[in-house]
Length: 286
Length: 292
Image (cartoon, rainbow over all chains, first blue to last red; front, side):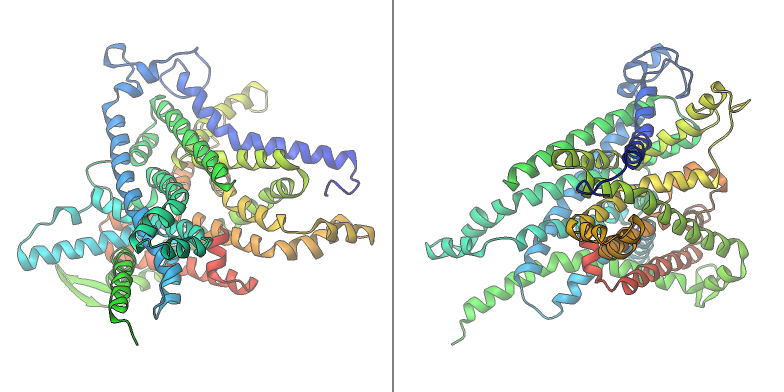
């Protein structure tokens, strides 16, 4: 059961085997995706036909359109990145002001508001999507019928996708930044104030630098969550398709290994982001 | 006595901090859901003419297809949550209690890595592994277990595999956190007093880990219920998942009234389960969310 208690060899062996099977289960799908990005065949399926880089480098001339020449895929990566940058910026800003609001300010209804800030996390993504879709189109119809205005950004498209993702990612940023602000040592601010620093200077030189790791951390998480979001995006998407939606469409039709190539790219990118975030986390803990 | 300058300044700062929070919640959560509620209780009687009615909810109960899919989604989600708990528990136990120091950290890290990758990518992996022309059917033929490659996609079991896989992280993390705080000497004492593994688990480990178990189950159930991608791609047309019904009504059939009612039914189910879970374990909502 635990190392300090005697346990039979049989139990320890079972445990080790279980763990090994679990890890295989965990990594098998990812490994499969990665391996078939290099298979010299038009479909990501066995048998193995030999190694090729066609699905990365190929172009129209070679008959196989690889990742770096697939305009549609590259465009969707850019679309996803633009959406993610907006969502990240909005979420970190709102998350930080929310942290100050909840940790520093006193006002009636504070408890209710803090509860309300967690609500977006328990609403299924699909419902976040349809509610924003319905609300935005009501506003658009109202503007159209009352003022004769056609407000483009209230129709399905990237601005609504940003709004939909922001609605719950802001809640995560709020939790992350609040958690760090809660642990802040107030005497640092008091010392600076006693020494004659203005409130703005204290905020800029003491409090915000202290919050930096939490802000960077929530920015990375917000970017990844936005980039990978599917449920909310599916309901709000217009003519420009973000990567996950495009991949979903192609997966339903049965795609070439170029999808494996873009997946491998995503895996490497998110692994690099995750590891650098963890390294940073360790450094600031010390 | 009262420094009005200071007071005014404090008020201005408070308003400045309140504005983003209020705008965020009002514009992306409260008003959209109020609007969705209004859409769900109207009925179109003529083009551009609506009356208030519960017709959409009535359709849900009178049309067997709809509530069958609803009940099925709830049941499959519950089964999937239970399987996730059973698979994740031994792993969490190993990380929290058996592995030591760096090994435990490394194992935990290894468990986290797959979940930094998008669900789309993970689902693509399962499709390549399981479909008729895929890796596992080919392997089964090669090993002589099957004569022809079997289609392993589009079964309920496939949906379960995919759902459990996607949920594991959200179960492992709260379990590890709650098991780590369990004092080993309690287990040692029970063992010295003659308790077997089963009674240690029942009388010591599970009561101590209950908050973590509840938190994990609530989050996993919620995410599974709201999942779209995994049931849709791994289950194909036979997946019959409730989020697909919402999508069909809203996007394919443009019947927003019906889709909105479905949305509220799903939200109601999800909220009820969260509330029951909290009641049963006597926890506060805020604590559970922080734990997860």
